[in-house]
Length: 166
Image 1 (cartoon, helix red, strand yellow):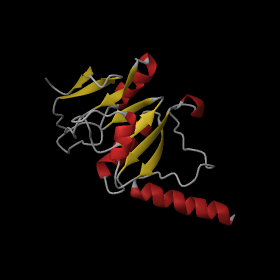
Image 2 (cartoon, rainbow, N blue to C red):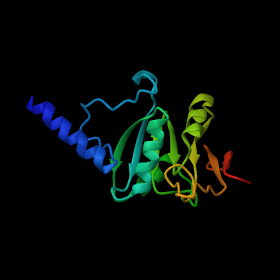
Image 3 (tube, rainbow, N blue to C red):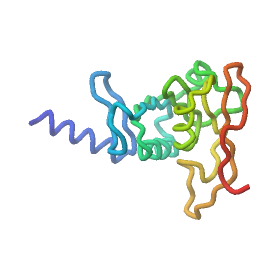
Image 4 (cartoon, rainbow, N blue to C red):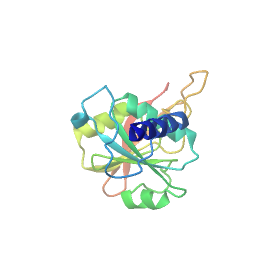
């Protein structure tokens, strides 16, 4: 009973802070009702402990059926270099899913398309923090136009999706 109470308190604390922090490798990742656990892709998200927009993006991804494991770090640059995020195409957080990286505020629908089409590439990126992108929503609902780029294995990029009014 005390283990259940401790788990409940820890879970409520994490929910209140907007984060789901993986503390050990023997605990099962959370799943959502949107898809069975076996079909729910696991996002490993590398982010700063103080970045609120990153937590909002994780919420967006969970709502789309992804499971998320958060890796907090004061410096995510080594992760960006390891996965191949090109210079000038970075953002505030880096995720890994299905053998690809997802850099920044990429919409869930684009990540789902990436995982379905499985191009020979390193990943997707939304450079910067575009207003209105997932996790960067504003009360007015305004969305500034932005491009999701596919990063090829040679480091070159090409447009993958366009969002917002043109």
